[in-house]
Length: 113
Image (cartoon, rainbow, N blue to C red; front, top):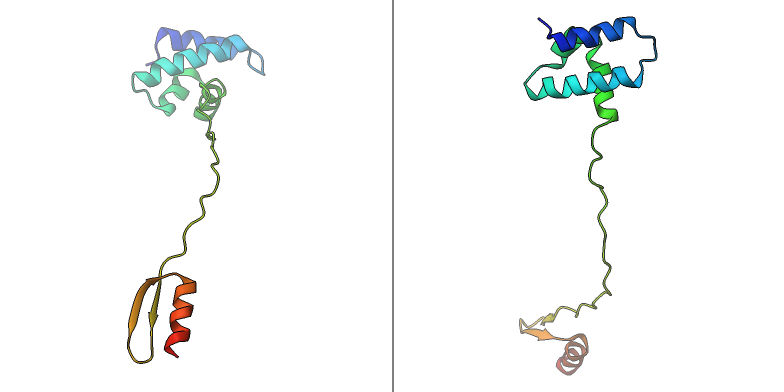
């Protein structure tokens, strides 16, 4: 059974003209917010007020607090050059040398051939 407040709002809705006035929308939003806090379903609100659940949801969404921004500041730092990973040289004879830079690996390869 709808409350007396719901009955009052329903009466405003039934006697009001469309589009609904700001006063009617405000009354619906206040009632719906309080009723939802108490656990009322959208369908129960719709039945109590004589409006569709989607209309009530839309009116509430139109005045809900703004969501936090989805973008956050980004600070770009200069790129730090990465050192080349150390090379591993394996000769056909099975010798393995690790940890050389490219110039030293090339020099060693020239000396071994």
